[in-house]
Image (cartoon, rainbow, N blue to C red; front, side):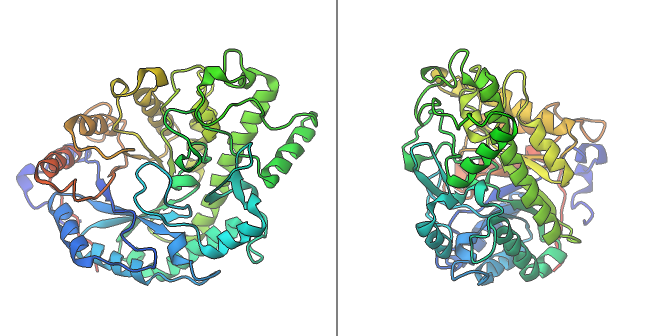
Length: 460
């Protein structure tokens, strides 16, 4: 840290209210064929962000690009060029280990599939992918069911992720040591989020459908059978009455009034389904801790903001995603507890959303959801970070993000009781940099920084 450039604006107690702002880079900043294509444009944009006071950028480091040529054939060269440019522009970097496919989710402008050699294995064994009750495969992310199955040229899925992270560390060690890379966000599911792909446009889902459970591949089915038998109920099977992607909770037996979700059988399934997800995150973060042992980086994991049907009794859209959250059962505290074991940051989405902007019939509760998740994270003493779910350029969206970043406002007495570790704005685009939009964004950055000017330098 250097001394502040303008001592008159510096107040140590107010500075404790400073929330760093990062900006997510475009999804296709590195092309499918592993080339950093438009460097001059990116340099210009990064310099504009730096001049606006932005602290750093976040970038997806796509598995489907880096290990595309074959098992353990990693090519980090394009990402090294990008990282060098970010460093040159005086920004920090948050790197996402993106083990999912890009394409098919809200806001996906490019398509980056999983490595072809992985997809080829899926041709002969399609059960490596998440599967719904009808047998439709989702090629966004490998099913949790193969986490410990040595199906990938002798390696398990967990080993694939682990080897990738170790290679990243070896090839980016200079950037890590220089303090450029500050966070490693470990992708744990579709869209890089710790969840099941329960709502996906490629299978016909549209908002605000409840989504579908995704545990009907042969591996997860066998695991459930074993768990049910072990609990003395070999007759229990996976849900067959939970409806389809675009149903409402009330139109299904599972999520309706006095539905299956309230029965012993339903509770057993939901506990198993949600615990599988938490164990998956736990195991991969264990590997990440080993891969980055001794590095001055923080680990992070992202959880999705499933705000639709939050105000209905069964929280159907959350349940299909793997978050067992009900009025009398907090589905997010156990995730926070797991993350705290790894000293990892809990990154949550939909910070910008307000209830009044949502469809009334979808019983959305983004404000209450964010409040629940953040306060649960703080109670578990984990660092909490967040981002907006959809691009916004208006002051209402920014004000909601500010409110969530410091729920108690600015503390004149130093560090507030509740303050976010950082906020990432989604995402860098020509639209964001347009005069009026960028002017509002700059004000947002200044407010996140509690009006403090604080210069941070990166050693080369």
